[in-house]
Image 1 (cartoon, rainbow, N blue to C red):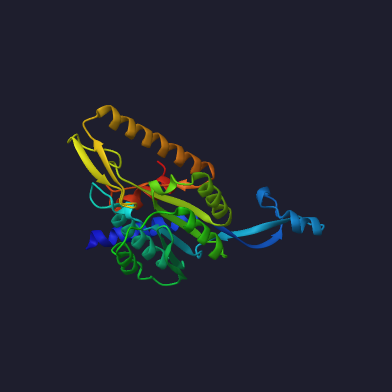
Image 2: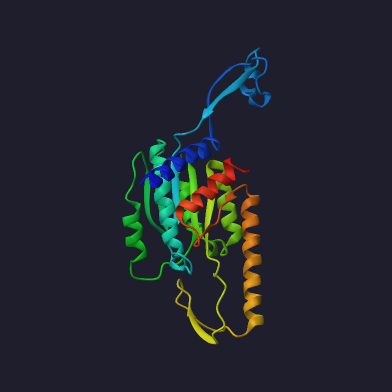
Amino acid sequence: MPMILWTKNVLSKLYRRFFSSNGIVLADAREYVAGDDTRLINWNITAKTSALFVNNICADSGNDIIFALDVSESTKFGTKKQPKISLAIDILKTLSQLSEKNNNGVGCLMFSDRVEKYFPPRHRLQCFSYTIDKIIHSPGKLRTNLLAALKFLNKVLTKRSRVILICDTFALTVGRKTILTQLHILKSRHDLMMFPMVDNNDMLVAQIGRITVEDLETGEILEIDTNDAEMMARMATQYAAYKKLIFRDVENVGIKIFPINTQDSATEFLFKLFKKIILPF
């Protein structure tokens, strides 16, 4: 129990430092005083008066946090400790609890090839896990359409918020240019970061001869010869190169990417995330 409490307390402190360092808001404007940062000069007010004015800023700790979670069939894949979706849910629940303690409104969008469920931000912890569990165990194949989710967020989010997009890496491969356009729009209006779900064995299959595999989202049946080392290596190389290209394009839009790997727990991922941002040594 003491170890659990220590972990929660440390994560809570790191969370506050992480988000307070990422966001500032304009409080008001005041006259310039020698030593003020010239980058804070408010040129609009200065142009209308005979005095030099600077912006007063304060830490932004009360912004709403919106989680956009991919609940499509491909997120059920996982060869390490758990499926991708299980790890994503654990991370979402932990961050939701930390957000609530930090007086942030918490909302959640669950999407596949359409908007499955949307919880507007509230200053209390939502029962996300029950709804997610109900969706992912519903009959039928849930495909991925990240574009639909981004368009929805760009439409409903009128207040500047922090958006955390948790999606399968494969969700970024279809309609890449259009997705990048919508990501750019979302990033210009909100603080956006992305947690793509990855598994070390996404494209790694043991050499066991000819196998039949099913695409979880489309139901398409494919036959693969896993003993064809050249073909398997080519597929893995092409996938790795394409994933690197996609991540580079997203980062070029100004969005920070933090992959979540099924070999980690939610706590391990969050410690790595916070350490990378605010404890770089």
